[in-house]
Length: 532
Image (cartoon, rainbow, N blue to C red; front, side, top):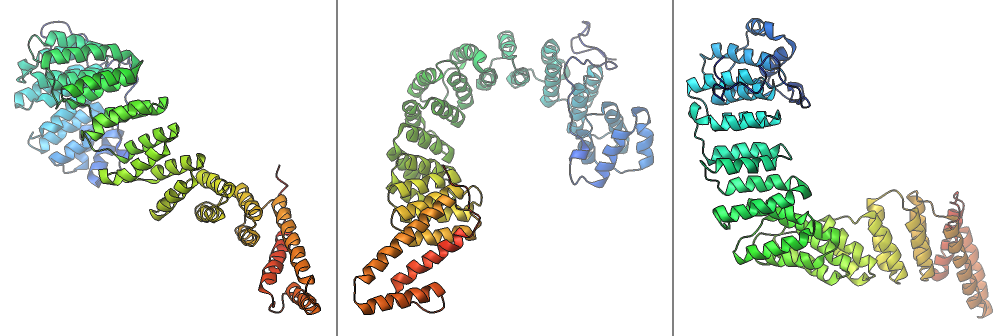
């Protein structure tokens, strides 16, 4: 075995024969989870997965499967769970390819060994790659991540410090790769920051360095706020303000806005950045709007909107407009919400079903029925379906507001798009139309509802029958006041209508009698219990 990357010092990790198990075992992708694999790849993967490492080369030889460099890469990517077999497959395929493996295939072998914590064998592979002149930063990036995943920070740092012994430059790109591996592990950003203070003696950090650290602090939640402030201050001192450093500003402000007094802190720093023509990106703006929604803080949202959207820092999305519309609606300012709806298309963002439903919901809730009608019409025209709860509320609001036509339009939309839980709204519409002296429409909709299988309550049908009986009596009294001819005419018409065998002479009375017959048919259905 050749020397370890830590020179002559004793290794701090076990040999390849006993990989550590201090962390949960990793779950690797399986060829069985990949659909439509080429038959030769599937056969090789199956062979590797089902054959002991001692017998794998013999089995491969007997299979007589031809392989290409691309096949080798494909098989290795799906063989992480079988490191011994994968390495022997790599050696076997090398003999068939005149030892002309691709650098990517070599890197996969290094990664497989590292992920399975066979670090001695991993370094043997690295030294073989070095002899072939195939080592690259990608190789060491794999080494960094596998050591960090195994909770071996010191070995990861040591690997970085001996890179130049293997012909790889120890520059800021390599440093950033190490720091990124440390920060991705979760809860270790402080270790990355500590090592940066050491590394600054021989590598000058750049904007990406600090963006990586700030993203690490962001991932640590409230605990990372203080560290993010320190790192941000250091960044400004080391590299100054840079309008192109958007990822760093994004991560820093995302850390702040989710911490204590986050919105106030974010306002302060955004204001300071604006003076230097530096701005965060979309990710922070979405996070800030989310926090504003939680606090119903429209004023702060307006500040960020003015700084980042009105100044054309980036183009707003439909999601951003929806967030602002919700905030305005919660404040009761549906006029401002409607202005945003009208403005969206000019900013390249188009309202979606959520946009319309949000605005329609709050307009109905605020009893702004005329505006709600306009939004409903636009919504239906653009083939966006109102939510069932919004339709239920709208039918009630329009009936209560004395607008039966809109109530009937919304009901039509409701039954065209939903088939369950319609009984309560159906009862309310029929009774509402009856109370608004729209008895013929009430009867018409009641009959249609029964035809759709919607059961009206006995209370609703009883009220409708009472209205029809009352209207029939009034009609009868009106005719009886007239001459005898009118009485005879009424008697004849009533008889014919009741039998439903001939055309009624009086069209008005025809409608009333037919309505009575409809109600009688409805009452013959098994009614629901009377609602309370």
